[in-house]
Amino acid sequence: MELFNSALGKNITLVRPAYFIISGFTGIPNIKYFYVFLFFVYIVSLLANTVVMGIICLDPNLRTPKYIAVFNLAFVDLFGSSALVPKVLDIFLFDHPYIPYNDCLTFMFFCFTCLSMQALNLVALAYDRLIAIIFPLHYQVKITHRFMFSLIASFWLFAITITLIAAGLLTRLSFCKSVIINSYFCDHGPIYRLGCNDITPSRVVGVLASVLLLGLPLAFILGTYCLIAYALSKISTRRERVKAFKTCTGHLSLVAIYFLSIIYVYCFGSTIHPNARIINLSLNAVIPPMLNPIIYVFQTQEIKASLKKLYKLKEQSKIATIS
Image (cartoon, rainbow, N blue to C red; front, side, top):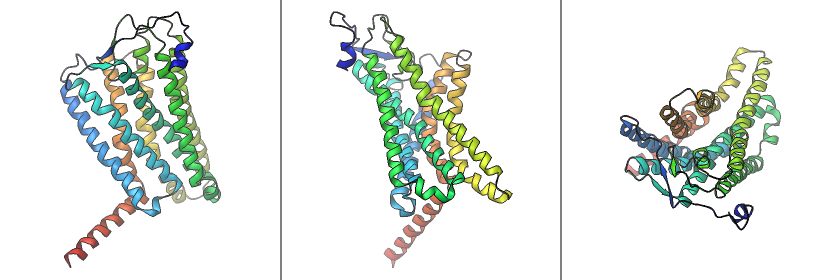
């Protein structure tokens, strides 16, 4: 962070608070029921993503490039939920709204990195479907283990770099007005708006991050499915078209769950109540990690087959033990 602070000059003194106060859910009626719901969602997310990761690890048939991306998505969902939900419950349910300055920036870094990786992981899965449908004969050559590992690693590096820059620029701000963050966690926008000095760099990075980590991934995914739709229209039989499209339904469901609420808030954020906006954003952060593994279990034939096989092996081992 010294690199960012040196740009300010040696004669400028920063005013950094000892702590921030998170006030996002304050004043919302019957909000404790929402906290119970968050806890339930977190437990389901924890169990479901652990199961998906375990299935992929245990079944050799699922150790394919596509399932490297699926495994990474489950890991991101698990890690992101664990970084966010327990802290949110501690802040609001147990009335600990005070969070130290450095802890707040760390909290923001992990939450935003995981939220960014969810969108980028959907890009990897979209590219996988694109090649599988448009270039099926070249799929094994184009989508290799090495390629998918490299793609996922580059996405992690990209997300971490942008989030580090955003957090680093916040350390250049003086906070002499207020320390109250009007969000459910240490959110980048509400934090930099509390700054007393020039907040332009943080605002620019915030907009740039939204474009790079949300806008471009969504544009790429939409473009991918336009190409897939065109390719499917060229298939002669309806049965083959439906069969090819079914391989995309799980991914399309994940895209809809992740992006629709974000688009709604960005398009109509100024017209909805601030409390409704905060609840909507908090749901967008916790619902996809819960639904992603459930969708993949019920909509992906390979995982369903793997579950059945693992269940049969478990039953056979029980019978052998009894015998």
